[in-house]
Length: 623
Ligand code: ASP
Image (cartoon, rainbow, N blue to C red; front, side, top):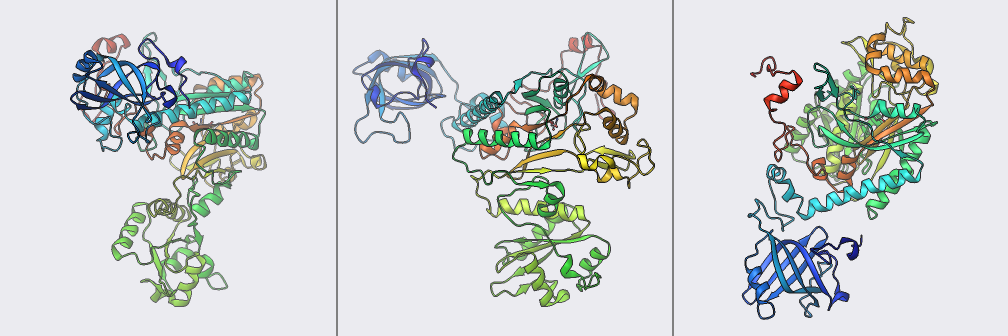
């Protein structure tokens, strides 16, 4: 990016602090910025002057500019100053190759302190200085002055710009949807805003613009996108905040492939524009069905930067007639119960000490496993494990080979229900892949996971819950499965064919994070009614929650589908971060606070009165 001096010039500066080069030597210039560093050599004062664009060295010589020198004597770190002077090449040997402006300095003729600054609570000029995050958030405006945050916010800005460019070039219309709406469920709690004009009523902040974007399709907008702020009241984690930003899009007259193809091309174009040096591992992106992803990686957001796939050991554990015959009770019982015995081969951990194995077992237990078996493949190919005495050397060797292990590897084995086995091994795989450094941190491994189950049985509610969006469409081949054994969609049961139906739902993952998800929607009335009935929505509840969309669907809804991608997550991964707070200007803490603005805070009593509210406390907690 090149600063154009003319467009950035203001009454305070002719150039930014990042603009001047050797070719400018001899020019009269004016700069403005913050004092980054100050070195006082008596007659000569050296100042590094900083703004968002860079750093320029300024020299104030008492002999040449006594007034400027006197003013500069009072300047301290982070004072805001403006300097006029002449650009000069630095003396040979004193150039600073680390700075783009390092060949020159500005010899000051005048120097003005525009504003003083208190000593900051942490070093602004040392990007590597460790600073407590609470302090960074309290003084976020100072934190953002520091180089790393500046770079990350710039990257985020370039990301959003690139996204906009690709969408505009592909016939999308950017439409803003309101934030004061009615609940749009996305599986979280709503933030609600009481209405003053209609006391007793509330707006909900959007968990996503889902219904509105579908209405825009009925409205004939054809292709919509928005950089949309979404609000979800849920517990915070590294990749979650109560408010976050999505790239939200919807397209008309599309099937699954059309949406996925556009999104993939967009993601590639945006990645190449924002981080041109980071390789995309594979394009076209690998596409896995949900079942295959979970079988192979134990995750619906697999990290494809390393192998370590999950391998089923059943065929080696059974006799020819299928009866379990391993000799190790835990495996045999699991197989007999119809459960699974699966493994991963972890490279280089064969000589892990006992304490490391204990730690892995403890981690597996935390993930829900009852235990974790292991086989260590020694350098000579022999197998060391407490369970070899049950399995025998031969079977232990075959299991290790089946798991794909070679000398030096440690095979980890879980025997449990299908879901638990896959989940525990998937989490161990994800954790170990990163911790053992099996990933190239530069690589961007995007992939698709699609064909999710349409519903999940909710035993408490005795109904089929949509696994994603209640409007997700069913894959055409599975349309006939949207039925119940009873024949009445309002009387579902856990063995219904509906449980086998797959949704036209697709998620995009990047380096083990879910980057986004979407679906082709149900746009036909008959299917929508059937699906809602299976999900246990009564007519009245359905109308109450989705009245607008149900009405709109009576007026000619085109086939449509879309997706939403988390901008914060995408920016974080492109900026090598594992916490989305690092790419948000003003994020909340883990407990949902903004320590800088002191939010949330108690309202002014008149605000409650205007809304007809009174805080009575939450049962069990004092008011
Ligand atoms: N509304 C969905 C979400 O926020 C995305 C989509 O289906 O387009 O996750």
